[in-house]
Length: 222
Image (cartoon, rainbow, N blue to C red; front, side, top):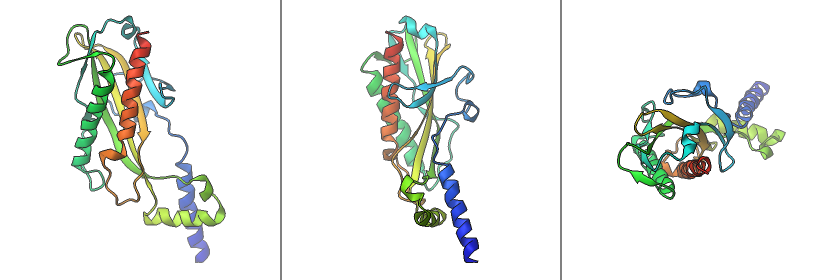
């Protein structure tokens, strides 16, 4: 009986270890917010993080003099939970809008609505979730492996806060898509599977996305 329990714990821990490999954003897992995922290529963002993106040559011609930032949204619309309540969802999109306005406002005039010579930026949050953290290297030792399996099974193990965005950049007059970006990130960990996730857990991720979008815009206009 003790042998059977030990094997169960080791299997549980092994599953956690398999989940700690680096995450790759696969096109087939996307939400449908973007118009064409087939053009996306995996590359490094300006900050060195993995991203899927595509930029049309039209964006590099310097044709846009200002940016209209559409309010960020969740796509598809999420169902609030005890772990991720509506107050968190509202705070996440609100902070994302602030971060994008702050970063893009450094380099270009922000418009009140789409129009001629205007680039429309439409951001969406397509995934927000929590997941049990994978094992750290010092937990691979046989003795600590059992303890880690117990903590995972009982729900006291740290939880990652995960979030994904998809951004469509469109011509303000025609609506033609001139760029698409997909980013995924992990924020500040939760203490356990009972703690409520807040916008504070992912603010650093949102700040990084906004900063990278600004740097990418500058890069294609050089």
